[in-house]
Image: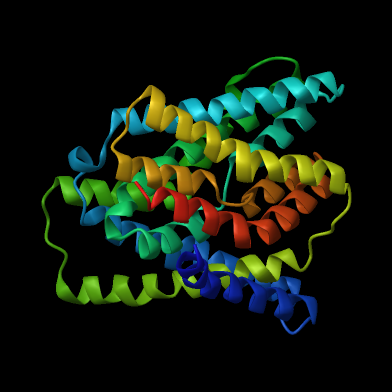
Length: 309
């Protein structure tokens, strides 16, 4: 446990450095926004493309793994939604809280950290988990919020979802990488060097950006933030573990990777959605702040546990 904690500590130290820079205004909100754009559109995309281009989709694809991650995530999503309705939340706020409970920082934190701690073979399961988050649950929240406001599904909603997927650089990078791999095209040395150099900026840049963005988050509605953090850091990995190990019998190593991915704190892009739709940005902000702080210890515990099998 201590060894794992010491390995995860540099990642959270970078987040802490970014938080200090944002809190002291050494890094302004505008600077944080541009750094996030650089990581999201360039550095992380280069990393994901390089990973995917050197993988075979046939080798990476694991139906049991996808089913287990989807089942565990959907169960927690449904549970939080049910409790939300019992608390008399409307559809939009309920969907946003459910999103907080299941969407972790897989892109910015999970990809670099889990591939380092669990080995390069972890990239395949992490990419599959990330794809489920981006394609299914990021689409679901748009459907629920838009349909609840319009009173019905429409072609506009479907068009919005489709354009959102097509414009998401992580999805585009992974897709192009697997296409490149499928065509069995070698990556020219200059291109590979370029991707490696650009992708190397993803880890420190992403972690610093997470911390700097947390500096602008508030800690209001702590009781809701505590509940959503418990769902994200405890319930989500627990039910993914039940699905992976007991129901779908996923390979133990792959199961450990997706359980670790499920244990990551609430993703920053949930706050972007909350701001865009003006649905509970304060509670989402608090959930991100609280879950990230707790995850310094909780993620180490989960990773230490999964490495035992």
